[in-house]
Image 1 (cartoon, chains in turn green, red):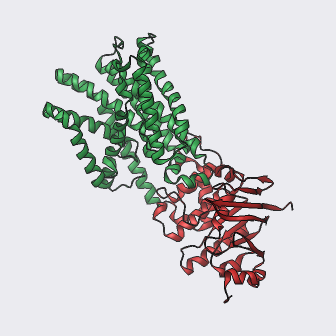
Image 2 (cartoon, chains in turn purple, red; image 1 turned 180 degrees about the horizontal axis):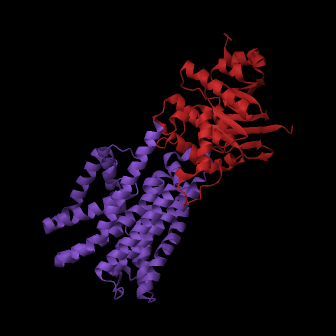
Image 3 (cartoon, each protein chain N blue to C red; image 1 turned 90 degrees about the vertical axis):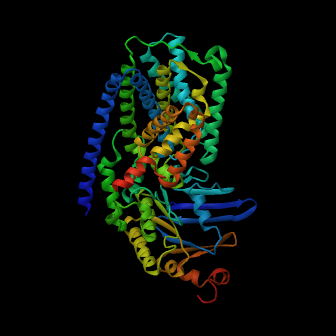
Amino acid sequence: MMVNARNSEASSGTARWLVGAVVVVALFALPFILSQLGRTGEYWIWVTTEMLIMALFAMSLNLILGYGGMVSFGHAAFFGVGAYTVALLMKKAGAPLVLALALAPVTAAIAAAVIGWFCVRLIGLYFAILTLAFGQLLYMVVFQWYTFTGGDDGIHGIPKPEILTPIAYYLLCLVLFLICFLVMRMIMNSSFGLTIRTIRENMERAKFIGVNVRRFQWYNFILAGAFAGLAGGLLCELNRFAQTEFLHWSKSAEPILASLVGGMYSLVGPAIGSAVLIFLKIIVQQAHPSLVETWAIFLGLILLVVVLFAPGGLVGLYQRLTGKSET
Amino acid sequence: MADHVLQIEKLSKSFEGSQVFNNISFAVDQGELSSIIGPNGAGKTTLFNLMTGYHVPDSGRVVFMGKDIAGRQPYDIVRLGIARAFQRTNIFPRMSVLENLVSTVITKNRGNLNVVTPSAKLKSAHERSYEILESVGLADVAHRQSGTLAHGNQKRLDIAVALALEPQLLLLDEPTAGMSPEERWQTVELVQQLWENLKITMLFIEHDMDIVFKISQKVRVLCYRTLLAEGTPEEISSNEQVIEAYLGEEV
């Protein structure tokens, strides 16, 4: 009985690796296929690059949301810090892209360490509200500090290295996305990840098995902030600008919605949710330009359906259809 | 004096003006299996909460192995060697029975900061977890999601989690609450067996007087915000004050 369970576990493990390998190969091939499609293809290379970046952002939030059970309404703060780090370093200090991208998660982690230090003292709704407050505070600082951040004009004209064709940048984002994915997976499967899950499952009991709950929530918050910072930095270079909108609370909602749609209790769920939402938004826009205004209605309907009929999101739905239990 | 594991000294606690305890003192001997009884609302669980850092006493000391631990953080007290199982089952419901144990063993060994090794591949933590599950009779259901276990088994798991912490002092808050008579006696047997095998100090809260008098070496009665009596089961069952205040005429 137990041997059987182990065997099927092992075979589903191989199946999962196989599916993963196929998806990765397809993702690497995608821009080369798209580039055959002329201008539409170029547009879609840009879109898929944005999808990868926003998927990374959504996965970073999910470290605290899905794995940690902490609802943050201020995650855009770290996304924004990463974006402005790249913008300021490249535009004002003339730093190379590699250095700027390497420092984006560092500054975001520092911001997360400071903000998180206060926030993890609270739980539930109070935690959520405090993250929102800090996020908006940072937004206002960037908005007002005109001489440094450009205020609501943002920072434009961020240099683009010669070799970075759209395809090359897509591939860079894909490689970084995959590395981040593997690192997050490693961390969440480790003892640290298990500890984070015990806190989500039962915070009181976690204290009574000897876990310093606040400290581990803080570490996790910093980790999530660092990955969000890298995502922000990547989007900044893709758009070649940084703007205050990156830090706005509405930006914090995007990974939450992506996690809901994709499924919070797996690593890929939020990434899939993020890509699906971006895709649907573009489809709606292209169906008729006037529908741009009504995207919120579509989004509302999608969320309604997900919450009512597929509370585990797309990944949960998939698991239910294939008869696998969620972990 | 030296072989007191725990000393409660002049402990007082009130919540929003209503006093739960006034000046309670007692000591728990090394290796003792003893119980705390008392009517509902006498503050039995609150006493456990004060011992384990969940509440901070207004005054008085909780001395564990020579250290005053009153007001310390729960995780700190756990590391010093006090573990507890809860009245209302307190496990990690969406994790497997095994994961409940493995996470506890990892925490006990202070291995939580390992971000590299998959927790599923930590061999010694798994072996230790299985060992504990065997000792409480849950090895068969190791891979079940713990929240789906029957109530009695969830209580067992709660005890197993506490045991994984290898405590000097184990606090059991109504280990048989909500169980069928049959399950109750199985649990009592388990508690007694664990106590004999592990040679640790155990203190439990219980409502069932048959159980209390059968297995405790010493019984403490909490009533009227104070420790009404303390003694062997025989002494307590014939103590007139206790009979009048709590046990009633029929005992």
